[in-house]
Picture 1 (tube, rainbow, N blue to C red):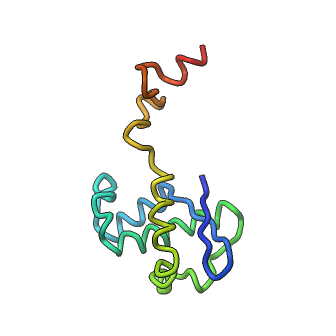
Picture 2 (picture 1 turned 30 degrees about the vertical axis):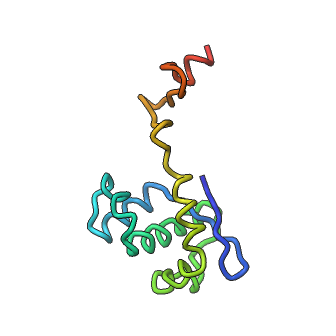
Length: 119
């Protein structure tokens, strides 16, 4: 899944993938399991956006990030799009009600999975 941020009148692809989570975890010293627990830590947002832009650009074949999206400038980007980005993060993670069970999502009103209904 790719989402977009708008910064300096340009759309930029963001993809919060394994790459983004792994590098954010390494740079912040936080385990993947606890990464969301540090949601109020500003450095986590900076790293997550920066490392989310890299695979977004790669997936769209855009090459390297432009200078205005460099790691050194990412806090200025967040100054402009912080609330948009924090809302976007939720789209990359399943809610508690939709967590995968054996690779299949459970439906809210039943114990059946989406595969059960397809049969």
